[in-house]
Image (cartoon, helix red, strand yellow):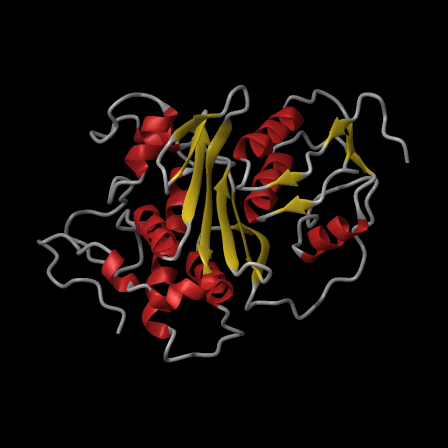
Length: 322
C-alpha cells in the first residue's frame, strides 16, 4: 500500500540507542491535531524503552484521534502483539488479533505493562526473573544473593515513578515497564517510563538541585536519597515508602555488569557511563524515562549487595537479604 503524501514516517528504530529519534517521533505524534496516517514500512526494531515511551505517548492522545498504521512489516506486528503493545489501543490498519504465545517467556522478557499502585513488588520480581533468566517461581540458591538486591532496587524505582510522577497536578499520569533479554548478544534492556511531571518539577526545591534545568535535575536524581520518600528513622526493611536509592543503585548495577542507564526527562537525556548531557531539541519528554542496559552473563560476577548504601546511622542495622 502506498502511504499518503502527508503520512508520518516511523524511523527504522525506536530504542535507547538513539533517544533523540525516539522522543522526536513521539513529539511529532503529540503535535498532531487530527487523525493521521503512519507509514511503518521502514520500521524494523523497537526495544523496551521504545515500547514504553511510544505506548505512554499514545495513551495521552485524545480519545477521538485515530492513527492509521500502514505497511508495518509482519515481523514487527507479531513482536508488538507478543509484547502486548496493542492492549487497550484502538488501532486501524494493523491486524492485532493474531495469535500470541499464551505461556510467554518469563525467563527472557516482561511484556509491556501499565503499573498501578500496589504492584511494585510483583512487577519488580517479574523484571528480575527476565533479567537473570529465572523461569517461573523457581528458587535458585546460587542466584538468590544477587536476585533479591536487584529486585529491591527495581521496586524502589517503581515506587518513585508511581509517587513522583503524579506531583504538580499530574494525577492522570501512568507508569509503563517492559524488559527483554536479547539472545544474540546477551544484553538485557529494561525500561521504566512515566508521563508525569518529570525530575525538575519534583526536585525544584531540593538543596541538591544546583540550577533549575532538566539536566541538572537528572544529575541530582542520580545522587543517593535525593528522591527519598522516607523519614530518617526508617530502615530498608519496611516497604511503605522508599529510601531513594533505586536509581543510584540500578545505575551502579548496570555499570558493574558492563552496561549503563539512559535517563531522559524534560528537555534533556544522558547515559550514565559518560554523564554527558544531551538536549532534546523541540521534543521534550514530559515525565521520566529510564532504560537499563547490562550484560546478563556479568550479573553473577557483581557483588550487588555491596552496591547498596548503608542506611542512616540513626537506623542501626545495614540492609540484609539473608
